[in-house]
Length: 402
Image (cartoon, rainbow, N blue to C red; front, side, top):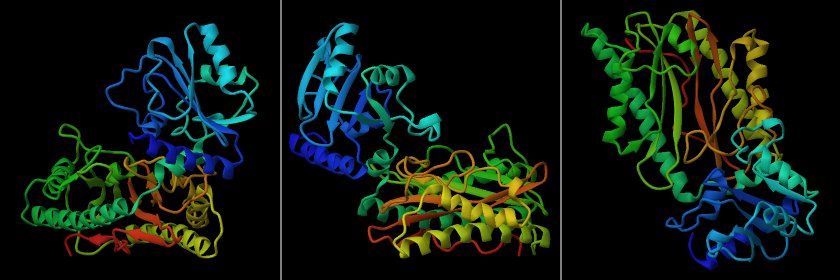
């Protein structure tokens, strides 16, 4: 984003979104890249030094306005709109009042009671300062989702390719484990993790952190990750959880993220399969809810998807062991900035919108014993079609030695 023409198109799109939301304007504040959303959305020239606070106000109608410091007064010149310059703290406060004149309500990167921590990047002091002008601040969460979380066609195609690779890697990893166990070679969670990482490199995939292999009690820790120094061996009779996430090694690519379960034996004991079927039932209940709602043209929110999975699991007596949200937004980061499927850790009231993706990954975790999780990725197309990437979905625990 560098030309005035492109910025003009961006402003027009933002103003349309503001009008749809019924908000007077969007106030973008930044200090030394403290607000990553303002940094990415405005996409200012890389060579510019930002050491002072700036404000960029986009009203729902009319021209944008800028407030910049005297020694960095040219920093926002690439953006359309008139600018005011401040020098002292007094002139900053006066300039902010002038910047927001005519507005009653503005959106900022704030979430009431920090309900959505991903959104809350503006500090409390700035919120106090803006409110002192008589302005009501509302959350920009929906705006952020619209401008941050939507994929274009190329990103969707990249995701499908990455998801296919991840499924193949899971299959090959179970084969790797089988070969090692049957040959009576020593094998640890770390060895399996490194095998999966090597497959990423072969296939041109990158990741924010190493994939996870966890066995037995370690699988009851949803965010367990083995290291070279901290890991457990794999042996016959173990429950194995593989959680892998990666994307293509190219600009703007988006993540795929899946979890599969296996058992180191020729057949899977009823205890593990029964629990997996409950988890799978919760997964499918959430997916069915999304599909039926989208087909009916209904607006649904992240917390409602969580309810669908959680209610299924709770009705079967395992609600207290489902200790995390049902799913997270997926984008250029594995945990993206769109709606999360959450009515546990937060109540995510953002609406699921086309061209966004999220995981559905319910789990049951029996402390000091084992955990079971099934994770799929869902994409909502422009036409509201609900697509599961990375097929097939897991239907039963894999008997790794079978």
